[in-house]
Image (cartoon, rainbow, N blue to C red; front, top):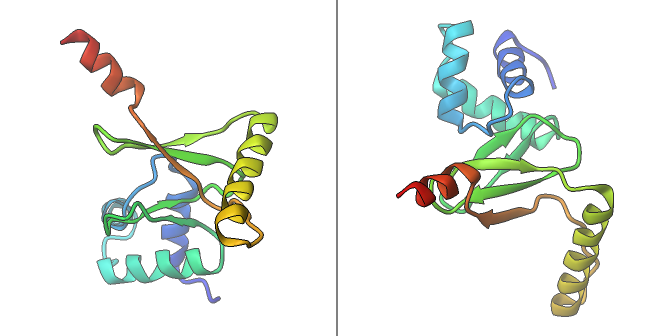
Length: 135
C-alpha cells in the first residue's frame, strides 16, 4: 500500500488517540493538520488501513463504526447510557478465560473453531454510574 501524506496523517491520528473516533472525528482532527483533506479521503484511508490490519474497525451495529489504532490484544466496553467506547485490558489469566468461554460457546453452537478478534461488552461506564448516584 502506497503511503500518501493524507494516509500518514490519518494513521498518525489513530496511533495518538485512545478514544475510538468515528470517521467524522478523524476528519475533524485531520483538518487541523492537513486543511485540504476531504472526508471521502479520510473514509477511504481508514478503510484501507483497517483492511491491511494497521488499525481496527469496530462495528457497533449502528452504522457508525469506530476505529482503534492500538493493535495490542484488548477488548472494549460500550456504555449503554452515553455510548462511550472504552478499552478493557484484563489480566492475561482473565483474557485466557474469556477466549476459552467464547471459543466453547461458538464451538457448541456452530461446530466451528473460534478465535477472539474483537469483543465488545456492554455496561455502564463510571461517569454515568456516578451521575446516577448523584441524582
